[in-house]
Length: 252
Image 1 (cartoon, helix red, strand yellow):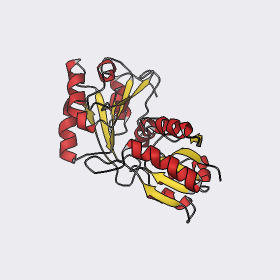
Image 2 (cartoon, one colour):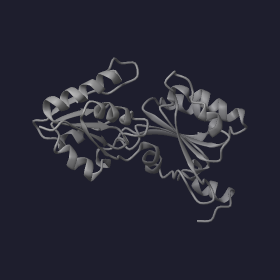
Image 3 (cartoon, rainbow, N blue to C red):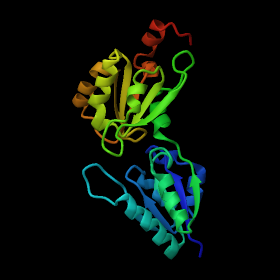
Image 4 (cartoon, rainbow, N blue to C red):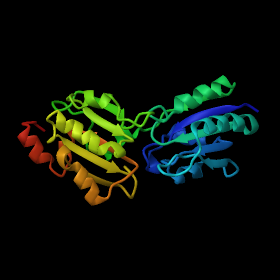
């Protein structure tokens, strides 16, 4: 029996957005360790006899520590064989997948990575918001809203001064700070979107300008998990795309 770990990106939430290769690998699993943001319908692709264990982390609730998850991967790979680690989005985009892979390899477990569809691109796209657009945005940044020490990332200060589209993951508890930072740099009227449960049936979102977003989020009772998108591309959302394109003199 070969001890193996495969990291599989499960996509942004909608069960149909996992890759075909991800499904094929899942069908060979002896053990599936899955996260909070993984659609449970995906688990149906795993063999009925496979052990399925929830190891997700949810704000305000007890969960496995990262050290415990690392240890579980190695223990189960040695005991049962093929461990598939299902992570929301892509395993290498703020998913700690590389840490798990490194730990497994250090303990003589063979590793493979199956990329996934990341929420930083797919969730805005599901609302017809492109992260880049010719004549509007030449690049996009993906930033974690909260660092290891619980503080707002220093990169947000740089991002707030950039013309790039900025996508913030895990940033809802820093929403007011993010908006205040953009207003500090005179960008309070920049288009902004907050999207909760993106691509899922219970998706909710608000779209407006930086200065009004905290109040809109409060009124619509948005919470986690959610992504934040800041940039002129948000102005391309169908709800006011025509008005934006005309004011910015952008041709179709």
